[in-house]
Image (cartoon, rainbow, N blue to C red):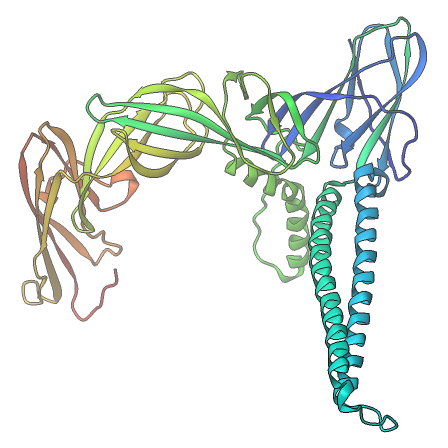
Length: 525
């Protein structure tokens, strides 16, 4: 096959030639866009010919349009023409428009009939209550017949009014239903692009043209379901992906691929500009500012794209050295309605060592943590994760991007079988122990009990102040002087004690600190 890449020029005039019934065969979804592969049937004949492809969304990016022609077919040119929505009106829409007009005319006639009946009733009421001055009073013998005539006329007028009310109510319902259906058809109307392709075939072929282009309005996000078995220390991680698309065209029975790469117009990194340091001189200030502004213009266009790249969470099955693709099994459909559609991509069982953790100064609860290691040969991209602990939902969290071999800790909620008691003894202050210095002493006591029938590793966290000035002195007291972990996760002053908690075991910790600073000065925390 021969690959032809062409830029289409979009005009506003609509095409009049017959269009080929092309179909979407394959879609590759990237973050924020989709690569669409269409099959365009060719007339099985030789010579010069013109083929049209109608119904493409106006969001087609012209620079991405390319054609792959079968052997023996040479593509000459390709042109894009925009078809406005007014030219896309279908027969059903015209039928509903005519129906709506008829119903509205019927309603007007019903209103006229109702008004005529009301005038008749008003006339009868005037005759019955206020006869004209020229009229002579009716003889008593004619009263009964006059009453009967007025009654018959009034009943007829009232019945006519009621009949028109019923007719108006029925017509209003029909008009409303017709308007809703018509609005639905009109909301589906959208401008499209028709491609006109000139080609020459040296031989008759039944192979289709393969049209490829990129559109915006499509995206996908990975998600996970992490089921922890606390007895076995194993974690089953299920892969899922959510796809949305509002590209302007429906994907029907297509092969769907989700890609972690991000095609971009900026394929090279921005260039660093020299940074020159000078002594400040007023006459050079304007020159320096102008130079700095020019230096920032080059990377400015890439800042948003870089931020998008950092926020992207992808997924994969097939991996090469730089990107990954996640193929959906079978063929699927996705309407252009921005509805999220989820797909599952299997699961992996990982070792997940368990550890109990507590921070008594902040929360007298023990939390269950599991550390998972990505033992697969592909990255696990960032995404939301639903957490289950022994088949019970524990909550949700977020999994960061994990390269092969990387670790990550997931919290699985409070462990109700572990109790923690904490006491903070009253602080003492003394300014006589050290001449010219004030001293504050704090002491804490914590008792932790493991109520499980089996043992678990546990870490008890605390903190002691960190001096931010050479005149401030901090002395760790009790267990704080010999912690098992220091400056945990690069947080200064955060310490921890490790304990292999046996079944039913109990541990008591006493720790504290002594803080001193120059007399007459205040400290801030």
